[in-house]
Image (cartoon, rainbow, N blue to C red; front, side):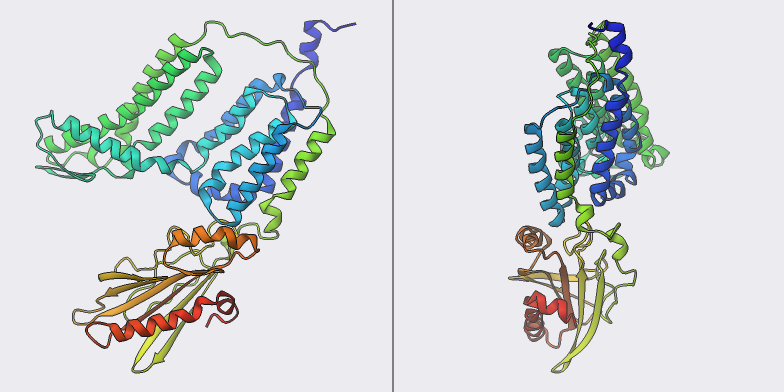
Length: 478
């Protein structure tokens, strides 16, 4: 006898489905721990992603809302193939230590894992992809948003009584200067509005047309709030001769403007929301099939960064804490996240060469020569000019008022030396396929003995060329 609707509703609590979803999420987090740790390090401690702590709570609520509609797959599906492709790309980028795609692919790994175990349900998409809003990948939008903000502010300021001159992203008015920096791009308002907009559409709007209208309202409003904030700060600075506290506390001003806009946006959303959301019939509870779950677990295990780098839990703890040695001519080189450094002083002809060899383990996502903070050249260096000769960078600088010195450096991988971090990242793909992940930065500096520095340059170039054999460099870094 078929159970009635009440009996079906009572038997399908969705608790089993929710537990399996949480179990798959926990398995992905465990097997991709180095990636999760990187996201934690660069997202939850960043003011731009201050909303990140709310994302897990939102995901849990979405799961709670859709749990009864979830149905287990009884056979394998095409989603498993897509999962394997996504896992292969994730592992390749991880071993190549290219952080941005590694972070972006992790929510997709979770989504494809869930769709390999459950039948299609839009709640699973929201549950998995909402993690993207806590993932530090949105910085790529900052430059175009910054440029857009500058152009819009310049256009509006032309219609005000305040004379203004724009040079790049710097605004000059009679009272002072303002810089429309990356923090003024409005990225945080953009991310927050997009996040809240998509959630509101998921819970309240079913019409595609109404969803598009609400999306446009949210996105345009977020941009307008930021433009109004910048213009208001400039006008207040002009009227108060740069003495107002708002100029130095402009972040709070942004939120004072953003909250009223948010209330207006949700008022419009309320007008667009469906009066009564259709309630889908609850499917009968079915037991999970062992076969799809077994293939899912096997795929995750086969491409797991955690197992590859085991027993290292946090690769950043392998970094040395020693201060990078300085030379008599300049302060410490701007290199960080390295595993070891060796400094030597070598006498060649009539001058001495100071040499640094930084080695990087290649484990995790930060311990690499191409780390974004590894600029090598000290910030306080009095640079005269820069040159580049094949794989070597030459920096001419003044250690004192009447002297000239030369700093030369290269980034090194298994396939040889390159002049910049981008080139090193590009050659990492072929290197990781051979199982070799280490990298290095080699730098030398010397005081010039003639006005042109030609003799010292030739000696430094010859000295660095000996490190073209990377295996010899690893065996005998000195």
